[in-house]
Amino acid sequence: MSYRRTSNWNPLEGLKGFALVLAKKIGWSALVWTVLYFASQPCRAVESPLTAFCLVIGSLAGAAIGWWMAEDAVENAGFSGMTLWVILVLASAAAVWSVEGVFLLIFGKKWMEFGGFMMAMSATVAALGTSVWRASADD
Image (cartoon, one colour):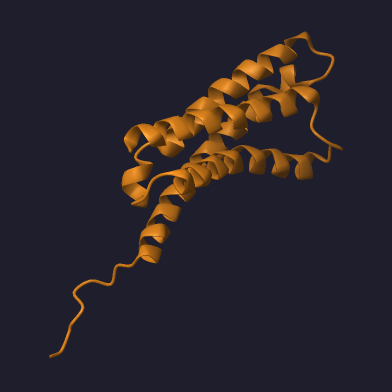
């Protein structure tokens, strides 16, 4: 008896599709973070009294990025749980920290100012919380 395959799908094909979806979302999130990077320059300096606003800006942007990364992630990935959460958190952090790293190389600063570090860290923590929350709500 001859067995003919009707489908070429395997788990790796599912991950490739999910990786493309995440790559698109990372690109758009990095573009938004680039706009925020330049818009928040007045509050990124150490001596600026506006530095406290970097925490708020970073937290709101990180929450939006994490929520958007996790939107329909369970359906797109085909799996759920801790593995998906780790992937979503890493994707959210990659969108933020890749932009910060590229601008660090382009502009040649020794390291980012305190406000910029605070903004990136608050965005990472907020993205962690919202992406896990959103993905677990879809389970």
